[in-house]
Image (cartoon, rainbow, N blue to C red; front, top):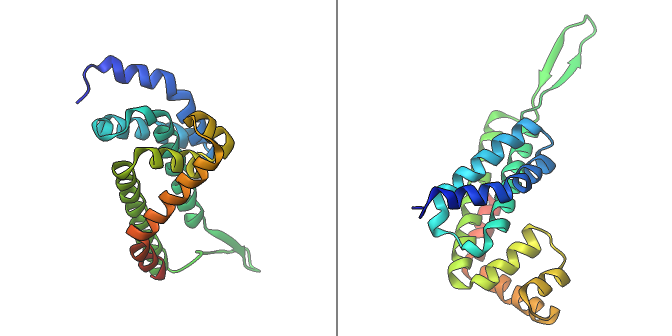
Length: 182
């Protein structure tokens, strides 16, 4: 898998603060952020051979961010609201029925799986498209800065993003629409 453990150690030392900061920023909970950072690096260790090694930083950031957002979304659904009744008793109401929550969670899992397949296919189809889409839409780096980092003109970046989005729509559009109709 890894040529040496020191390679992983170097990546960990270089990006551990970035991953922890991203996880904390999006989850709002330091202890959860630590767990997310740990699971992000575990996932890196497992899938390292299949990743584009030039995108490790953006992959780590995106993975930590997505895990934190998923945690926050799930935590928001699990919060119960308390209502006081006249004689001092509390009743707890959930946001929706258990069936609705289960169906929403299944949909989220399906969406997550589809997004993973889209990014894997995009990386295989054109690594430059993958990098542009990841930086602009997931890391939310300004397009002018992305163009500069990629060594291309802004107009070329716009064209690259347009082509990548059209390819994604063509290849996964029907599946995405079906998933959102559930």
